Length: 289
Image (cartoon, rainbow, N blue to C red; front, top):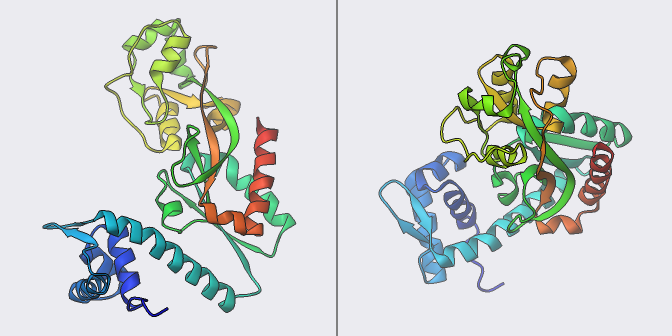
């Protein structure tokens, strides 16, 4: 360990890399910006090369900085986990990050059932659409909607989805054929393709360029139920609203789309508690499918 850097420089480096700013890192670490800058400069001197490209209001990692960050982040995460287990050895912890709509409509009930079987586990549930919580070590596993490839992460398929338009009953009464959608406001989500559904319905239409776009599928469902337009939605997310009659399907046509996946950093393979929950959640996903 003769070539270890000054250890107090590593949290400053990780925070600046994660937040893209020495000022933001200083705020997160309760330090002054000059203290953060000094610590990172000390680390760069120790390593003999720059880790950041300095810009006016932000910083970006150099190629060397990106390689070094992966090692530093993993080391800090292991230290954090080891310290936490020593402080609270009696309490196992599982941190889950879910896509917002699936978290409320599918995952929460499953986690509650699992916790009843394992009351010794302390569950932390958060919502996010991106992969930041997983890549930054803020979550042990995530549930996300997407394709098969998840760079830098392991993935286990939960279930495949089919998509179809949904809208309020009043709006559905004005729709007789899929072509009637040409005159409607179409609500959009970045992961759901109207063009794919148009093709299934026999309509040669491109992806809509206009219409409100929602990152949160639950908000988009609320907008559709309020009569603000027609939303394209997955069967799992729309199930409760369809069952209640709050939303209806104006057309029977649906089409296959992406899938929900459990995603996690490769290090979880060495953590039996997390792997046991992943296997259980996969079984729950198969039952849902």
